[in-house]
Image (cartoon, rainbow over all chains, first blue to last red; front, side, top):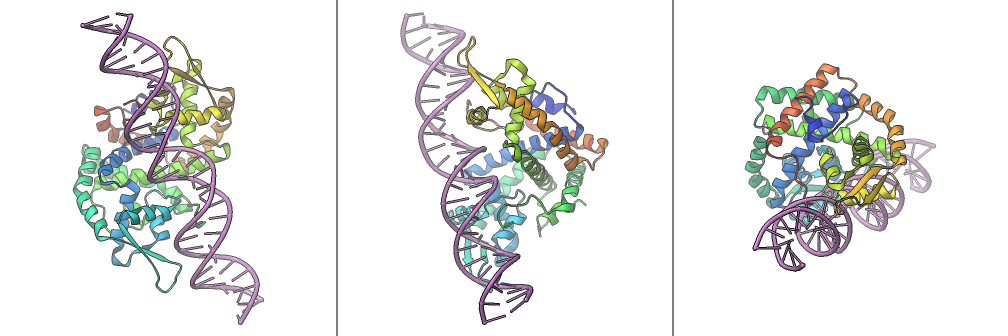
Length: 168
Length: 168
DNA sequence: TGACGGTGAGTGTCTAAACACGTAATATAG
DNA sequence: CTATATTACGTGTTTAGACACTCACCGTCA
């Protein structure tokens, strides 16, 4: 069981350390999950990151969020939120508006089309999650979540995540 | 503890399901680990994927591997192994040679420089892993590895990983 | 022996990521 | 009230990822 990854990637040598094996397991598992999510989202012409943005903006509601706030809430930090939003604006999923008290800020909000897309996606996404993780019971999932939270605990003590090169 | 991710990404709503929360935890954790690895490798002018290739080829030894075999052993499958190897060949890290019985195959091997780079990297990589995961004891790491292996178990029953668009 | 399907590798092209730099608006200090 | 720093956003450019397509070689079988 614990040497499953070695077979998957046809590795001949033992892992250098348990830490390395754990890191590779995380990477491998993420690759599988992300790939299937990306495939599922492709018919809707959005990427997992764009889906992430849509959900963030839906959560923010009518007041919207500025570019940097969106960047900070992304699961995977990306160094070019501007053009990510450019593409989503062009696709009609979000609306941007400069103004308000501080004229540096550009507020981004989900559009009606964006909300409709999210609603359409909801069932599909649940199905993906069931396919990916439905074979594990709640206790196992909770345990996994707790362990991953522990993994991140060290990083969190020192920074709020990968530093983005923009605005740094 | 289990709501750590919500704070990290400043999420206001509860997660849709435990499955979703687990998937997002995996993604978030991977993003942190991958980012710090990429930063550590940057002074050596290679990416995590290139590092992965170097280790695969070192494991394969003098007989080398053909392009598709390399692609199958990567932690993260990439759809353009050819140009990945192009870049590494240009950097002097690998050698490619067409020939042998079946002249369709192109055998790739690590170069001397590639091996030297790997040797130089070894200590650095161990240090990274200690920084990332050194706060967890062996039992905890083993547990995490076992859980992630369970997560992947379902995918493995149906395919050997994300299908690559090339050669499919 | 020569047409055929399958396999291994590579190319063209578009999109996205990564990184350094630049601009505009606000805050702060003297 | 001006000079400077800081913040928020955008742009230019290089590199890598994604996907469809083509070419070369092999085995097979009529």
